[in-house]
Amino acid sequence: MLILGLQGSPRKGGNTDTFLVTFLEKAAQAGAAVKTIQVARAGIIPCKGCGYCETHGTCVIADDPMSTEIFGLLREADLVVAATPVFFYGISAQLKVLIDRCQTLWSRKYVYKLKDPLAATRKGLLFSVAASRGRQLFDGIHLTAKYFFDAIDAQFSHALTYRGVEARGAIRQHEGLAADIDETLQKTVLPLVNRKKVLFLSPTGACRAPMAAAMAQQRYGEKIRTGFGGWSPGGALHEPMIRTMQRAGVDMGYRKPLNVEQALYGATPDLTITIGNSAKRMPVPGKNRVHWSLPEPVSPDDAAMDRLRLETEAHVDTLRRLIK
Image 1 (cartoon, rainbow, N blue to C red):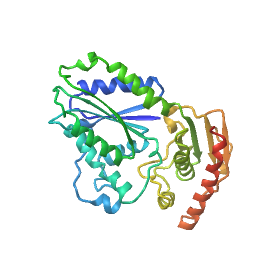
Image 2 (cartoon, rainbow, N blue to C red):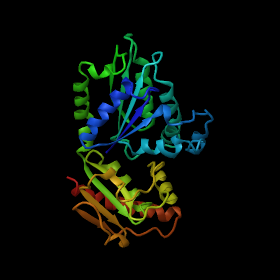
Image 3 (cartoon, rainbow, N blue to C red):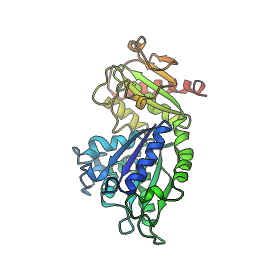
Image 4 (tube, rainbow, N blue to C red):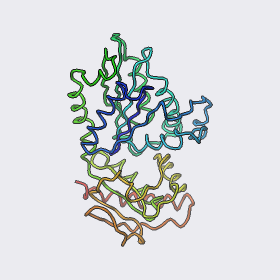
């Protein structure tokens, strides 16, 4: 599994950053892959409010880190942790820039009616630290987090918020922090880490493997975490495959083919499924292997791709007996 930390404080090494680092280090020890975005240093361009994403499904700003990297990480993540100090009873301006740009993902969900394959199991956590002690200190932040997590197809799991933390490094001495983190790991991280890992591989990892992985993730996500890749991955997913999945309401946007080593973030799969006759003799990680002879798509037209999708779905149905 992947945990994506969004470090929203402009002060690297401050209390918010330290809080997030402490959590992610323990999560990594528990078996999760972790990645942090230092939002203040990411170079994200603010949302233009132009409405382009509602008419095109993508952001008009195509060349900044949000479009080239962060949207993809938000899609790959099993758990998204938004960490922010409190500025005027709200989140930091730097994190707000990232959240505003997620209007693109909101549009894909609510305008285009697409569901991300991880939507049923992705979680969202809010971490926030404040120097003051106001009664309604975190109310606005909770609301922002609620709608942010909804837009990125994450269930808002819970929040860890602390008042009266001002001096640099004071969060380390906060009573109850270690216990709160341990409890969060037990409730939120370990159930995701402990799922069986199923890897789908096809020669290029651009069509059949991601299609099957997405279907299996949607259907069996409480029990498994899927990954996909190829021995010779291309630069982008197969556009006709993306369109046939969209017709079925599944969002394959902001994903790309990975090589065998990158898939599942280095974790050893419990089951590897190779797809396509040319993949029969390819070396694969893990001990358990199943082969599916799904044909390579010979036509990009809608009817042919829809037939491939239905054939893939029939194979995915057979996973039920393999993942008990």
